[in-house]
Length: 246
Image (cartoon, rainbow, N blue to C red):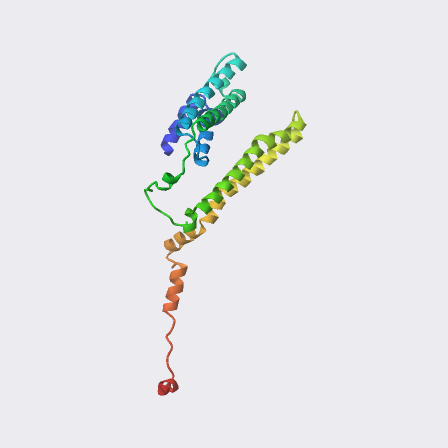
C-alpha cells in the first residue's frame, strides 16, 4: 500500500497536481455519493436504483459544472485553472445537491420500505464480538445510536455550513487582526481534533493495551494473579484442642 501511494504521489506531482488540487477535486469526484449513502443507512424508504442513478448523475453534472465554470471564469481550461477555488466549489455543490435531490425524488416516487432485517443477517467473515455486550445488538441501543448520530451530525453540519460562515459576514473584508483570529481558531480546532482522534481510541482500548503489555512482559493478568494468590493461601490447621474436640 505504501509503495502504491508513493507511486501515485510521484505521478500526481509529475502531472503538476499538488495536494490542494487533489483535495479540492475530491469533492467533485466523490461528493455525489454522500447523500445517497446517508439515505441508504438512515431512511427505510431510500430507493436502491435511485441511489445508483443519483450517484452517477451527480458525478456527471458535477464534472460538467466544474469544467464549465473554469472556462467561464478564465476563458481557458488548464490544470492550474481547474484547481482554482470557484470551479471546485461549484463542482462540489452540484455533486452533493444534485445527487441528493435525484435520490430523494426516486425514493418518494417509489419508496423501498426496507426493514433492515437482511442487513442484520449478513454473515461475518470473523464473528469477533469482543468488547460488545449483548445489549449492543438490541434495537433500543441501535435506535439511541442512530439518534445520537443524527443529532450531532446535523448539528455539526449546520454549524460548519451555515452558522460559521454567517458569523464572518458582518466583518466584510477581513482585517489582519480578524483574519488572525480565525487562523488561531482553526489551529486550536486542529490540535483538539488531533488529540481526540489519537488519544480517545487509545483510552477506550486501554484494557487491550494493558493485556498486550502484560503478555509481552510475562506479567500475569489481574484475574490470574488473584486466582494464583488465592490458591497459594495457607490452609487452616486444626489446634490440639480442636482435634480433641473432634
